[in-house]
Length: 193
Image 1 (cartoon, one colour):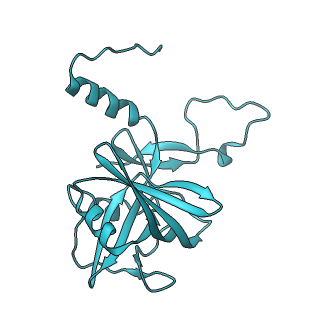
Image 2 (image 1 turned 180 degrees about the horizontal axis):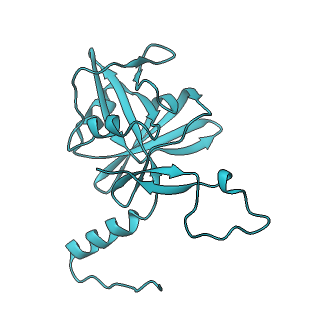
């Protein structure tokens, strides 16, 4: 089916169309953590972006009004736990209108400064070096001090406003002779809400 261009007339229509279009971009799901004045602060993010390998830089984007944004500006350290496909419950626990603070079993980071989510697929720990104002969001840029990855398992994804996972098969696709075997391919499979 060909794409039909839309010409929204109102700001609400523009925002709605923009969100729908951006929802077509599948992203990983992570939990950003910080520790400040004896309290752990965390929120679910799908905006983790590697920026540079020399020096090692990552970024996350948060709404200006997000409680987590305020905590990150105070603590200056950032933990990122990249979630496994089996960790949707944790993603939901830390999502919402504001970062939440409540009892949770944390994994201690490599240098004991930032708590992390136990059992995650990968971890990044860094120090904030820059905060950039971008419209109604803030872009937090951090140098990476530690990174750790488990090469087994698959990530939790966010696609079209829903959590998704990778599946080991393509439905309805034709395999070409030089294409990877079916067990090497991955497709998105939405999870139930």
